[in-house]
Figure 1: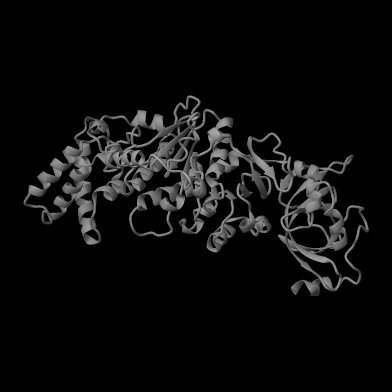
Figure 2 (figure 1 turned 180 degrees about the vertical axis):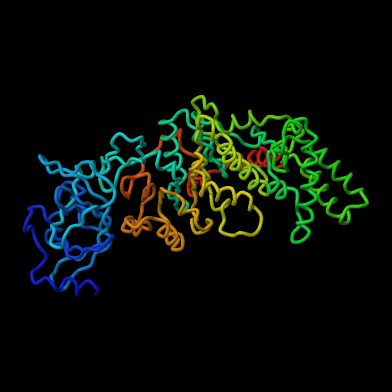
Length: 550
């Protein structure tokens, strides 16, 4: 074992309280981020009987230890342990988390901060961290924060998330299916809404599960009341909806669509007041105008191609106009200039005590969902850019099932939404746009997006590849915690990054029944004992199925 040669330099067994009655060992090798300590196994067994759960946990993997350096206390996390044959002690790898000042009268830690200015020397005693120490380390002080649970292994030290750094530098909530991810997302968002009832949060909900959770303090929009005007789409989004061809034909079709779309937009009287009208300008136009212009262009003799591209575009536009499933977006009723009302409604400007808008995309046709998410995300970003000279209204965009919209593939459909969400991840904080990503497959996310998230909340991840991705995105001091990700219980999380003082393992609070998302797992054994009323169930279900509505 690699540790043995290091530890064999000690002629005596591991120290047992030579300098300090509480000492459980000493430092014997120092390096920048990770160092090694020698722990007395007998002392560890005695500490394990302590009534204080933090002291009883001291020395175990994932626990914290402290050491005195001058007038400061250094806090470190235990990452790995091994038995040393020569000294009969335990050799442990530790990662330094931060330091706090020592109160002269009591010796307690106060004013704890991340980072280390002065390292201990070999031979420095290491001591267990008590519950009182934990409360000082994780004290939120006077910074704006929300409390979301208790710090492991204590039962009363509250875990605080610093809201401004967490939202200012984006956050990601990761966890395998069934670990309590949706409830945890609802818990964090509820706490933020309670703290900031005049906030502006937009949440993309692909399964229709969050509407129930935010019925009291949020506005829920789905196909029945979203009324998203089609003319808010930019040219790239128009191409994703109307252009069906691939390869060289796609380029031809896109060029024709660009020319006709600009002509259709310029027919609106708003276009006269706009000096530089482009194909991307959010100016209303009639779909019937677009098809008429396509028809007229197709009839011209000097067009550079045959009539097939025009026919393809016209057929697709007519098909979408006639399909009732698309009426929430492509309806003749949506041609009026409702941009201001729509943005005020979706961004909660003003919020009227309901700071979160839930966009339920579950009943939308799957081929249009990514375009809807793209339009909403781009509106958030464009609004922030063009409102820079106004009083700032920062917006948080939360994206559930983020791997759907920011895939790691750069081919195929859905590239418009990928581009805008990647841009928000990279540039959003400069403009007051925050991104919250929720996913169970971090390895399927576009490369680099996870590393743009300043705060990572990792629940249990069962897949090795996902674990490796999260480890790569997390800061070095959190290594010891990362190794416990596969062993986390439901509703437990490792949190590290800007939103917390130091990396922590948290047992999350229980959320009241009325505030939980509708995402509970069905009990097969209970439900398979029930019968009766099947004809009515089928009748109602088939009616909704045929009507394509709820």
